[in-house]
Length: 200
Image 1 (cartoon, rainbow, N blue to C red):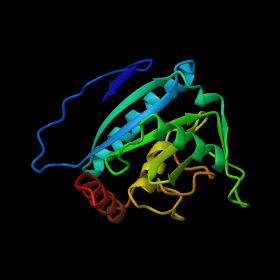
Image 2 (cartoon, helix red, strand yellow):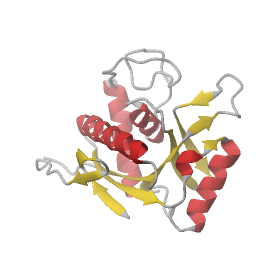
Image 3 (cartoon, one colour):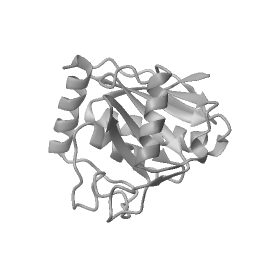
Image 4 (cartoon, rainbow, N blue to C red):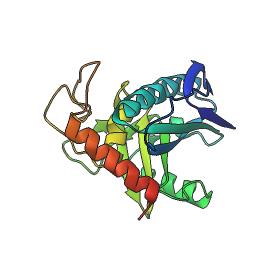
């Protein structure tokens, strides 16, 4: 089942919203979210996170085109370490879901994320992964409201910062409810979004 998403309504059902005609051609980030069809709670949370991401990207000058795929494969029950993440991505590649990492970002919602490759961090709310020419973001079911924005920041070339009021403050630490991006970060994200649309 495919659900085209722009504006939150109820549950996992979203309706299109119309954007004002831009004065220039804004880049569009395409995001596909994979959620277990059994995970109703996770579906509701991801709808909110997508809405937060859409509003934040719009403030940067980037439009969001997103959809939710309800999967029969129950990724939501998996505790995902680095090897598991690679196996999930390979499964998506085999199923021809991860076709073009430059044009579409895939987000997979899982139970928990184990950072077994990082001795300083046990668990994470989200992680951006490149593997075998494919790209995905893994999102833990208990992720905070700003996790998806934070991970998309990594996708668009941003690193962690020490400013606690910034979206890119490390995920394992508490951040304010209304974090921001700096003007330089917004420029970097916009540039990366244009490059993503144009390809190599």
